[in-house]
Amino acid sequence: MSAFEGSTALAALRVMCRIRAFEERVGQLKRADEVHGLIHLSVGQEAVAATVCGQLRSDDPVYSGHRAHGHAIAKGAPLDGIMAELMGRAGGLCQGLGGSMHLVDTEHGLLGATGVVGGNIPMAVGSALASQLSDRDAVAVVFFGDGAAQAGHFAESVNLAALWRLPVVFVCENNGFAEFTPRSAHTVVERVADVVAPYGFSRETVDGNDAAAVWEAFGQVLARARHGEGPALLECLTHRLRGHYEGDPDRYREALSAEDWQRKDPIRRLAAQGTTAGWFTDDDVTSAEQDAERAVAEAVEFAKASPAPSAARAASLVYA
Ligand SMILES: Cc1ncc(C[n+]2csc(CCOP(=O)(O)OP(=O)(O)O)c2C)c(N)n1
Ligand SMILES: [Mg+2]
Image (cartoon, rainbow, N blue to C red; front, top):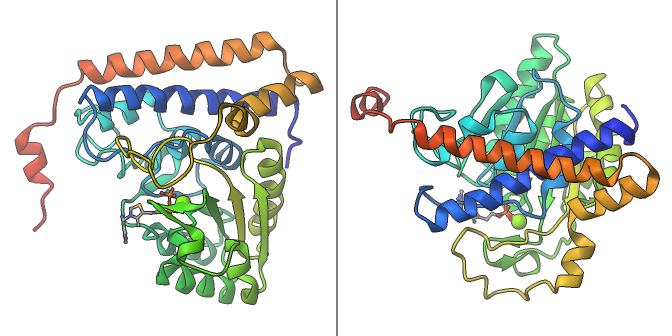
């Protein structure tokens, strides 16, 4: 595992800025009705995607859920293709036929996002089994929420992963809410990491808005999984700044004060940490933000210039 400093930390910051700029633009496009379907943004959760995917190879399969844009961007999927997908255009990652919750980019190892909460967890276990059976050292990673950990197939998945010592890392982004319901309303187990205690594999809870902490913790479990030491679960405590979906009136929780957000914002935290430690300069931060804005503007241009998929193409992919 490389140390989280210098160019490594700056690279993570740049990815986080890209995710933030991309998603803020998507929010605007949704309000303008240019992006279709339900949209779930991960503003506030960017540190997890950037530091986990930043340590993976393109042959390490990654699975995401309904809040997938950040994971796709961090895994290397092109912004053009993601934006076009969200706008339902033929140039999208899935030819504009999948949308926000169904991003796939096999070239970069993003094997799939799904709107079925927790449905990605057994799929990651399957990929890990494939890796093990074919004597490869690829490690499967699945991102899921605290709500998904309440699904029955989460228990089935961690059981098999532990039994067969599969190379899979379960990365739980615990933002404290499943849609509009706080975790305390559906379980007495506060920490998702505690749920897997009986299985005996490595588990840890970290501050998911602290990029350095996530990098360090994930790097360790990744190295062990890569060397055949079996699965691990990393629980990242985080906060989604926006509502559950774009348009959610968000009346079920107290709004974060500006000061609290300033303290929690993973981008501001890493920028401050990195400039103080001398990992990078203020100019590097400004350039990361500007590059992100530029790349997102180009992605929007690409998407708008891309045609809608033809009805014939859409019909040709219906198997029923
Ligand atoms: C199988 C299934 N059940 C219910 C839903 C409706 N649903 C969509 S998102 C969500 C909550 C997910 O919460 P969590 O896993 O914590 O992810 P977060 O939205 O907080 O990122 C639910 C219940 C669904 N999409 N799929
Ligand atoms: Mg949640």
